[in-house]
Length: 254
Image 1 (tube, rainbow, N blue to C red):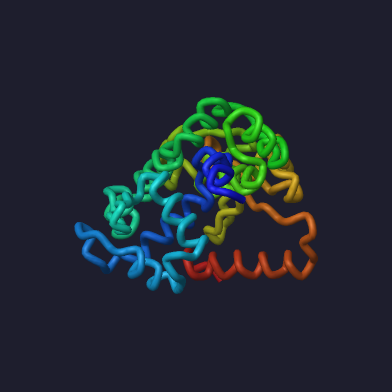
Image 2 (cartoon, rainbow, N blue to C red; image 1 turned 135 degrees about the vertical axis):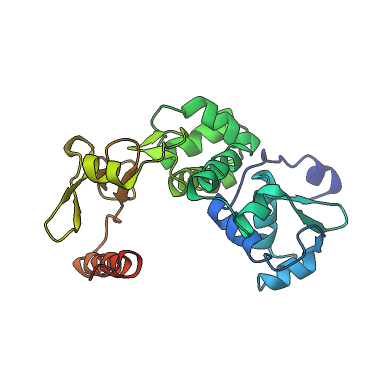
């Protein structure tokens, strides 16, 4: 390939290659560094156990920058922006941090366009979204699958998908008494047993998963359990044990 061919090689439109949660996990690695001073690529890469020339490191930097967590310079340094500092050293409640995640999710140019297109609608299946990104958004076929899957996974991880619908409406905080009254049966022992919303149970939003168990708390607050299609009974028993452990650790329920 000569120099002219290299110059004319098509370039994909910018897209996040890692999820927002992964980008947040990246900036959290530097919570003990001075937040108002830049960090060199080499130091940041070493903290991640890779080299600065590693593709995974480059993809993470690019994604974190697009989400508005960091800025980068031509001198190969990273500076942490306000959202990164808020995630790395949180002083706010869960609702505020959730709202911040929604704002970061909207930050990449590609995502802002997709959100404007699909808010209030069903998110396309991965293969369909992959084709849409190629045909309408300037994403090259070679990277369209990663771009599509990362968008869907990020939206799901941050709670922006409700029953397969893209919804970035902030949740209204509820008191514990409201939660009990609207979404639970309280037994004599004081243990709350959640009652699923029959109309919202077993609605699948992703072809990679079996139908999810979707438990409504009475409004937009929901607990959703996704199980992979190929999950075995042993897998299900493990999930059951982990949920029991969570109840023991968080709520003191044995």
